[in-house]
Amino acid sequence: MITSKDNSKYKLWLKLSQKKHRLAEQLFLVEGEHLVNEAATAGVIDTLLVCEGVAFEADADAAITYLARPLFEKLASTVTTAGVMAVCRMWESHMKAHNRLLLVDDVQDPGNLGTLIRSALAFGFDGVVLSEDTVDLYNDKVVRATQGALFYLPIHRTNLTTYITQLQQAGTTVYATALTDDAKPMAEIPKQTSLAFVVGNEGAGVNKDLIAVCDGSVIIAMTEAVESLNVGVAGSILMHHFNDIG
Image 1 (tube, one colour):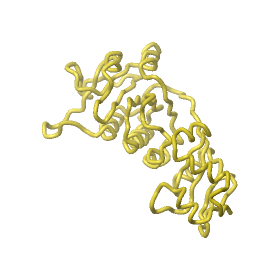
Image 2 (spheres, rainbow, N blue to C red):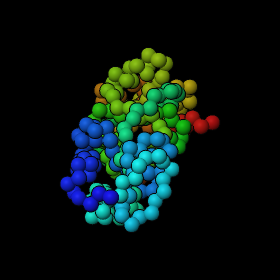
Image 3 (cartoon, one colour):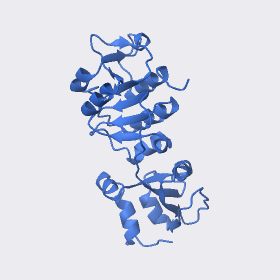
C-alpha cells in the first residue's frame, strides 16, 4: 500500500500524464477493468494499481500495488473511477501485412484517433500509420477511445511522405481523402489487393503535399445538406467499404 504522495514510484506515475515523460519512460496508464484486462491479455502490464478497498482480480501476472484513495483519485484522469489502473509498457508491433492500411495525417482530436484505430481493427485493416504531428497514441483520451484496439493492431509513427513512397514502390495503391477535382467516389475505386488510405486533420484535411504524392483522391458521396463528415466517421465509412474481412 502506497500512502505518501512523496513515494518515488507514485511521483513517476503522476508524470505519465505528460507526453514527454511517457516517451522518456516508455510507459503509459490505462484505467478501468476493461482496458486493464485487455492490457493483461496483450501482456504489456508493468504494474497493476488498485485503489484501497477495491477488490479486483486481473488475468495478469503483474504485481498489484494498492494506493490510498486520495492518491488513486489524483492519478486517475476520469472523474468517476472504477478503482483499477495499470502502468503499461509501450511497444511496437511488426506490420505483418500491407493489404489494407490507414494513414493518419495530423489528426488532433483524441476521440477521432481512437475511433479510427478501433474501426481499423474492426474492419480488418493491417495497421495504422500516424504522421509525426498526429496526437499522441498514448494520450489517456486516445487510449480510452480505442477501447483496447491499440493492443491488437500495429500502429507506427513516421514521416508519411516517405512512407507513401515506400508503399507505392512495394505495389500498394494510396488514396487520399480529399475534395479535389479528380477525386473518385468510393464505388468507382477497384478493391485491389493492396490499398492504403490517408485521412487528414479536422480543419485542414490531408496536407496538399501528401495529396500530390498519392495515386489519387477518394470522396464519400453525401447529400448536399451535409458539407463534410467528422474524420472519425469518414474514415470508418471508408474502412468499412474497403474492409478486408471477407
